[in-house]
Length: 595
Ligand SMILES: Nc1ncnc2c1ncn2[C@@H]1O[C@H](COP(=O)(O)OP(=O)(O)OP(=O)(O)O)[C@@H](O)[C@H]1O
Ligand SMILES: [Mg+2]
Image (cartoon, rainbow, N blue to C red; front, side):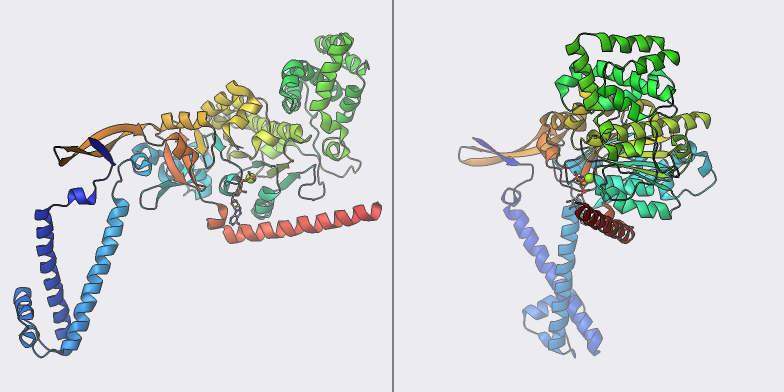
């Protein structure tokens, strides 16, 4: 019969009679030497003497000849000093044992297995700083600040504490998956927004990201643009944006329409009528844009499927084929036409909400400035885009983020290939509020333009829900840095990650009983470094880091409230939250007075 004992040798199996005798002998020697050392300390204090060697001392003590063991030295002082030396020795021994235990590789320990990763040094400060100097000519000849070199991801996990800090460089593209309340905003979004050296696009479905960072960004000299059509922060509207400005081609119109159609929640309807609804919206956007119209016109044309105005405008603007296509949609079978128009109306339902359209149509107050994506791309401004999850305003968030990123791309091309300083697009809750239709394609080249996108999702499946199986796989594949945090519940993803993390050999001891005698063997078992269950159970504050060309690593994430700027951020957040409360109370009072 044989029974597995686990990877560690059992204490009883390791112990044997000769070793026990040897240990007892050496313990007696050690005790005697320490006692002699204690007595010598006492003699030094009192001006007395002790036996000349520890051996003589030991013999005198055993024979009860204390006056020979420590002549002219008070016995109580000797007792105190010896006790103190023993205590010191025991304390040091325990401390040493704890340190050794912590550093001792435990067979099968994933932290130890993943710690053996020399290539990960490419993500540490010095190599990333060198890379930043190459990518950003403005840093040449300077000693770059930590914010200039890249985005800090956390610290490598080691058996005893943590290792060096690791960074994403300015040519990386990031995807992060973490469950709700596991730190997406506190460990990723807030630190990234605050440390970005250039312009920032930050999306969120709550006020937390804006509250924690806006004032600090403003104090750093960055102009803050807050797009909050649903009054999540209760702040007044200070600007507007015309999505139709600069929209001159079918491709641009189609792209804008794509953001709207992607937010249709009904998957069946989206698959069946989506492409036709996208064509319809693209035609209406182009008709409005080329005739100096606004999104109000698009809303009206959507409500009246038979109106010929957009067809006439498209023909006049030289888009004959599109005009014919629109006429076809209007004159088709009634069920088909209604299906297309209804889907387009659902996709563009924000156009029926005056609170939302106020942000994207010419305002009554002509002094309200309009947002220019091109000027933003050339600035170090911060654009906050807030909307509740799956709300009607979500297509506008996606459209504005996309427009700003493409303006940055154009500027990068004009600058010779890369933006300097780089633009960080921190898309918190991307699947809920920032469904940029071709984000997977953008990922393949944004990094080379000095635009660093960070797509933060609650799960891999959430991404599939937006970009489809292939789209999400493309996004995942194109991301050079993937961060998988706590609460990944997808069995498929955890299994795939366990495969990617790899396997190692773990020694397994087993004991066999035969003829009344026990014998112990050690064998090697090949097993996953991180089992799917262990990946699922990653505790909050830790994450698996997958970087292109480098073995996976475990990192410890640093939330802003445990970082060096916590006091400053707390003050900024408290101030912003007070402002939200005051504005909300004033709005409620106004509403009560009006009703
Ligand atoms: N100042 C703070 N001090 C201590 N803990 C905090 C602080 N702020 C947030 N937390 C905690 O940090 C955890 C992560 O919060 P965070 O808002 O980052 O999660 P999230 O993943 O963004 O959540 P959601 O999906 O709701 O957006 C929460 O448990 C929260 O209570
Ligand atoms: Mg959050």
